[in-house]
Image 1 (tube, rainbow, N blue to C red):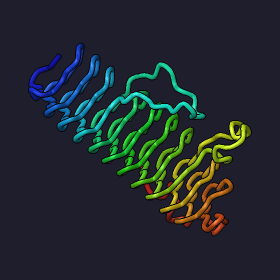
Image 2 (tube, rainbow, N blue to C red):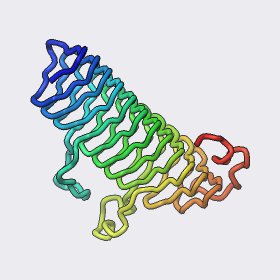
Image 3 (cartoon, rainbow, N blue to C red):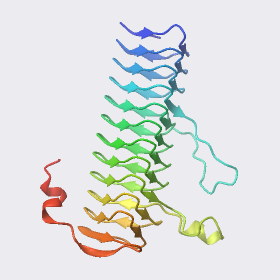
Image 4 (cartoon, helix red, strand yellow):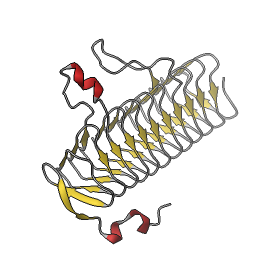
Amino acid sequence: MGSEGAQVAKTAVIGADVTIGRDAVIGEYCVIEDGAAIGAECRLAPHVVVHAGSRVGDRVRIDAQAVIGKDRMRAKRSILQAASDLAPAEVGDDCLIGAHATIYRGATIANNVLVADLATVREQVTIGEYTIVGRSVVVENQTSVGRKCKLETNCYITAYSVIEDFCFIAPMVSTSNDRYIGRTEERFQHFKGVTVRRGGRIGVGATILPGITIGEDALVGAGSVVTHDVPPHTVVVGVPARWFGPVPEDQRLERQGWE
């Protein structure tokens, strides 16, 4: 254990075969379990838990009481199949993990990602570079989130979803993957998350029903309930959401110069 210049609090609990990079700082009462790796110049605040085998890149800040690599939980009556042999959690370089955030085993966080306070990233989730996972956001299992996305405060991304690059999901957006709300065996044939294609935007408080695809660079207005797929470059609003018009030319993703 240990590396040049690392500072490990006396109250920290460090397991076997742990690697701590140079100039890292491990705070009071942290727990780093067997086989975990902490990169160079990381800063772990007090009471952080890094579970066995987890990998944390260089220059990562992890705030108080965050948990990295938590094992999955599965209720006996859950319809989601339990994942087996999950890989350790991975957090890339230059990430910021907020207080009380939880990243599950099997999750992969790319470089330069912000996972804010109280957010949860479940097992078998991937988060792309420079994405922001806001305060109290939940990203459920087997979901992929692309690079340079913004998932704003308290939005909920249901299991088995795909969020492509440059997407914006506003606060309090809700998504769903079960059209039968837990009744009849037929629901298993239609169980599916949502897909938001590249540059898609969803306004505050909108609800997206199971299996819906929001097309490339499309826009869903605030408070809308989306019951059908949204074509690319289209604005929809209302309950249920209906065509409102095309996305204005100056709002098109290709006009923003973000690549």
